[in-house]
Length: 257
Image 1 (cartoon, rainbow, N blue to C red):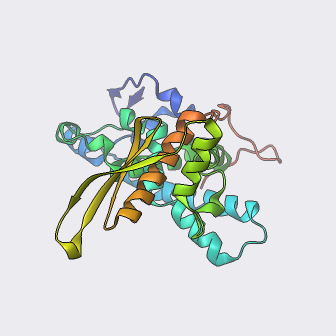
Image 2: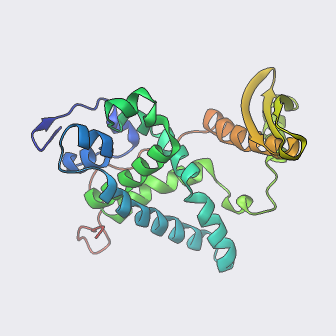
């Protein structure tokens, strides 16, 4: 790859699930401000992050609108808020190995900045913006929606009635893994400011952990993390989208902006 005189090699980048035609857009999407500053580059990924935020909001909004034709605006808004929050986008970024490809300054790399949730979220937004510019909004849709359906096949469960501990038990019973076990790893702080850390074990193996101000809330957080892990381990990952340029029904190239 070449951008502004810099030759770049990013082996495995095709595994993100989209093949860029304009490699310079990809390089810009992967350029953390610390990397651009350190290498005196005239660009970083912040503008694409700005674009990608709107692209993700649009894709998720349209997806939920079509999926739930009888659901009111308030519930749709709650689901969209969860599906577009920082931790969710960081999860998607980790799934497509953004931590391996985002380019950062030496100091950020030493402090594992590439694994920071905020960095992953920003990089994912920039990537979505870049895909939209490179292949049109439909390409962005076909990149984002499989991730939504893979991790959250039933977004309505994200509303208040969803019970993560009960859902984990359903998953373990269905797979014959036995009953999940919750263990208190740590309890610290004064009585009025307790902080509990609880780990979730399945079949003698520690799967996830959660920390909160009560044991019950910590168990729920551990269950939420376990659901993500169990889905990733036991489900088929999203298929890669087509690499040729997406066309709209009129035959004209669809543009992001």
